[in-house]
Amino acid sequence: MTRTTATLASLALLAAAMGISAASAQDRPVKIGILNDQASVYSAITGPGSVAAARLAIEDMGGTLLGKPIELVSADHGHKPDVGSVIARRWFDTEGVDAIFDIYSSGVALAVQGIAEQKNKLLIVSMASSRDISGKSCSPNGMQWANDGYEVANLTIKGASDGKPTSWFFLTVDYTAGHSIERDSQKLIEKDGGKFVGSVRFPLNTPDFSSFLLQAQNSGAKNIGFIGGGADMTNAIKQAAEFGIDRTGQRFVPFSLTTVDIDALGNDATQGMPLVLSYYWDASDQTKAFAERFKKAFGKMPSDPQANVYSAVLHYLKSVKAAGTSDTTAVLAKMKETPVEDLFTSGARIREDGRLMRDVYYAEAKKPGAKSGPTDLITLVKKVPGTEAFIPASESECKALKK
Image (cartoon, rainbow, N blue to C red; front, side):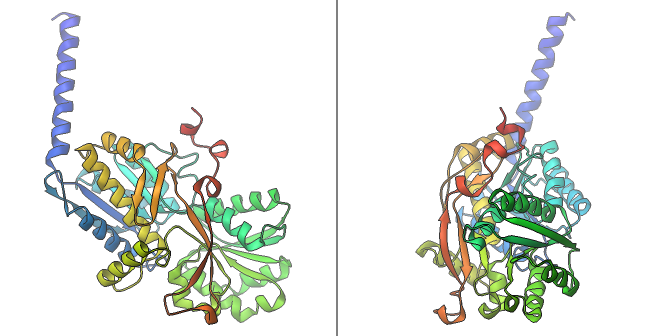
């Protein structure tokens, strides 16, 4: 056999293999996975509620795509990158999962994003705060859909400081996302002429914050920033009230407050505290209708992260339909070329680093006397375009933005 003949034979075999691969993608059902915290510190914010949100998105697509049912699986990563990696590999390699959503853990997200790229699958992170996900560790197969650490730090610091230079001390959760948000916060504070007094780090699932709060009080900083969420944050807010932080002239400023937390703690404890979010049920008739539907399905009002799971899953499924295949390369192209449109998103596009450039809100928890009812929890203070909220492309470490 001549070299030319051998080359042609190899190309024919490659084409045949590619044809089989494409046919295989067409023949099997579209399958997605929700990987998150199902039973621990962040489970009330994402957890089973995110699974419910994904089901609503599947329902809105009619339950089928490409002539086959849309399948959904879920699992708990336990905030352990090795556990999340094992689940992701199994889902991709043996269970036919095409895309993974949610996560809400930066360490797990970074590990799974690497695997998704290796396997040419998709990871759409609804909430995980490390900007490394769409920064220095960015991947063509990964996306950040809702809040990230830079945006939360940017809007919270500006909003809580009313745009004026002031001093800050931080209580920071001791994991990847916490460190990332603290670094961004320090840069933003000092850039605006404020003072970063210092910080102390605490482990995930800390029941007693008294020693950390004492250090924060003794720092003399005007603002005590709390970088953490879920049960850690609710415990810290309760204990900050017991310490009388506000009575000493300091302000306790959580960076990851959600409507779930306000509902659990009450507006007496949270009044005036800031939130950064893209979904709130009272923002429009559409968001109200979704909240009612979600509550009927799940028994509770949707959180911002859960609504963003709905948004991400819906855009993915629409893109599969438009592409006419679940092949990752084709679906990725459709996701990135098509503006995101849903009940609380309009015209948002996915930047080359995977960052969804959506509008977000800076909000504050209402005073108890200002509430019109039990679900009237916050005031939407300002709507901020994604171009102002998220890290500028010029400051990103993502190689895809340097081309």
